[in-house]
Length: 316
Image (cartoon, rainbow, N blue to C red; front, side, top):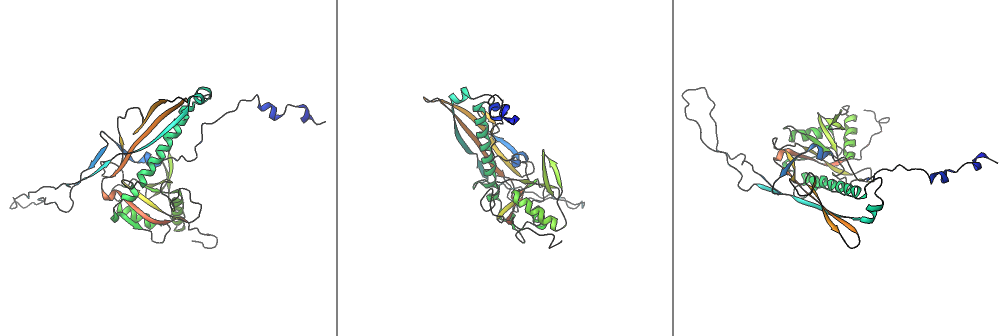
């Protein structure tokens, strides 16, 4: 008789073994690099007014002369925009229910309520990044000025296309923003041209650089309307952003000093326990974004992500 019939089976031994577990692994979560690179400003009353000077219409002139005969100094003033744009915070909310019996009995080694709240917060933050990019009212993609929009030359993103974006946001550009498929497409095109982009570690992440400006990946810049397109081909957009209030760039907005504040612009309120033992929590995130100057954002449109090359058959 074989020895294996005289030893404790693996199935039986499993009943006495401890099992190491992970916290819930939520596959939809992303690094959300945009939130780490963009500058945020807290608001007192949920409203942010962007006052601008009326450009091109100012009567102000200056004197610059070494001629002592010119003693009359020009006079004038700089006009302000009479109806500046105001941004009001929008809210992203959800209600989370937790069975108190589950919390009481099944909270070792991980606290069930804490894990549920953590996942809910992550979901709201994912939605916030999407709104900063895609919201009709304040999203960067839809609120970029028409003068700041360009088309790709040949469909696939070329080094020349990204250089054209840099000519639109030439005052201290902060970062490009693109879908991972668009970044891969650009790397293929740059490599084919013999100028493979460099990489660098910035803010704890490794990023492809173009002309020293990092290209941040996000799946919120959709490809054919999808985060994870199945087709090899598809079209998307690439953004170039300058961020910072002092730079007249793009800033994220949030409500400061919330009651029950969990993190920046996010409150978590306990709503009580109902007759069935369900504990309820209200999560509210208040957010928006403002483009302080037209040249703070540029968009490369109709970016094709599906061009590939057989280098063995078509060498560069």
